[in-house]
Image (cartoon, rainbow, N blue to C red; front, side, top):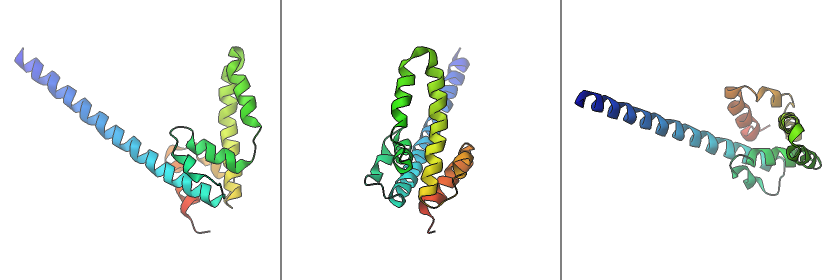
Length: 136
């Protein structure tokens, strides 16, 4: 009985250490992306690049404001409230996010097709960093 309790305690401690490790990685990526999108917002002459720090939607706000497509979110909101086509609304939002980022990259004089490459996880971090902090 004592051996099982020790094994269970050790397993719980390992899981907790792993959870803390993952949490630190997620917070680090969040901070990196917030700084990168803030730099992109400054390059795009956004009056409030600090919006990049809003969890979850900050980068989308920077891309949306740089793209100057102000009427699309209203169409997306309408699709979310109609239950039958809400899946299509989510899919449309994913496509529109890529379009917003395409236009955002073009606004800061980067190739627009970089928005498509941002689908790849590691390239996502590299591309937004290059876009935000490159001198050109």
